[in-house]
Image (cartoon, rainbow, N blue to C red; front, side):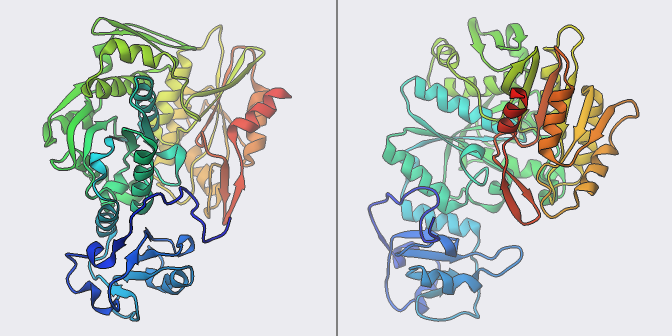
Length: 480
C-alpha cells in the first residue's frame, strides 16, 4: 500500500472548509499562512497525508511533530499546524496551545455536527468494553436500527485518534447507520480525543488495576473514566454497581443514571453453550457464559432499553448473537478437550475467564493455561497475574505475549514470582510451541485456555511485527 493512501477508510466528506473557518478562535493563527486555503482533510501522520490535507504536527513522547512537516508537504499537505514557534514558512501556522483536545475540536469543526447524525453509546471500563459494544451493535441492528461499532477489533487503538474517529463516524452516518457503540478508553478521555462529542448513553463496566504505566495510580485511572459521566459529555449513564468503583460513580456522576447487578436476574443457569436467566419476568438466552459475561449482557440490555426498546424484543435479538472474536472463543473440541482463546491480559480478566471455565469442568477435568504478559507495559500486574493463575488453573505454560523491546526472560520471572509452590508449570518462550505443548498435554475433559492475545493476528518482538494468530495455531494443533 502506498504511504499516500488512506490505510483505513476512504474520505467521503464531500465538502471542503476554509482554513480560516477551521482555525477561527485560535487568535492570530493565520498570520503566517499566506492567505486562506481550502482544506479537504486532516491528518496527524505525515505518511498518510494526501493532497488537500491539513497536517497537525502533534508532539510525541520521543520527538517533535514539526520535524515531519516537510514530509507532509511532500505528500500533498496544503498547510501545517505546529506548537513550535521555531518553524516558519508559507502554510505553517503556529498554535502554541496545540494538543489532542485542540485537534479534536478542529476535526469536529471540519466534519460538522456528527451528534445530530449518529447516536453515540460509549462504553468504558477495564474489561468488557468489546463484548458490550458488539452486543449493543448486534441488538440494535437486529431491531431495525443499524448500529456501527468502533473499538479494539477494528482499529489500532481502543479509541482512535480524533481524525480517524471522526472520519469513521462520518462514514457510518453516510452508510445509513443511526447509532454507534464505541469503546472509550481512559487514555482517550485523559487526552481529550473526544472533544465536542456528546454521548447519548455512557456505560461503566468495571475498573481494576491496569494501564498504571500511563495513569500512575488507580485513583487517576478512575478519574479519567469518570470524565465520561460529566455533564456535557454524556446525557445518561448505565453503571455496574457490582464494582466498587461503579458504586463510587453512582454518587459522583453529574448525569442521571441507572445501575445494574448480576443479582438483578433470576433462574440463572450457566452451561458451556451459554447462559439462561430471567430479568423482570422476561427469559433470556445468550451464547456467552461466565459471571463477567452476564454483567456484559446486563450492561447492553439496560442501555438498549434506555433507548426505548422492550425487553422482549431485546431478548429475541440476543439469541442470535454468536459472540466476539477472541473473547472466550471456542477453537474446537477434540477427544473431549475444549480449547479456547481469550484476550484476558490483566489479573481481573484472567480471574473472570478462569472462573467461568472452571464452572464448566466435568469428570475431574483440569484447566491448562498458556499465557504471558506484554512488554513495555504496566509491570505491576505481572506478579498479580501469576497469583490468579496459581489459584485458578491446574497447569500453566508461561510464554511470550508481545514482549516488544523487553527481555522475555525478565517478564516471565515477574509472572512466575506470583506462582504458589504447588502449581505445576513450564516455561516455553516460543508461543507456537507453548500452544502445541498445552494441547498435547490435555486429557479428556480438560480445558485449554490460550490467554492474552485473543483476536490479535500478530506478535511484536523487538522491532518486528510478525503474523501470528492464537486461534489458527490452536486449530492446527488440534488437527494434529
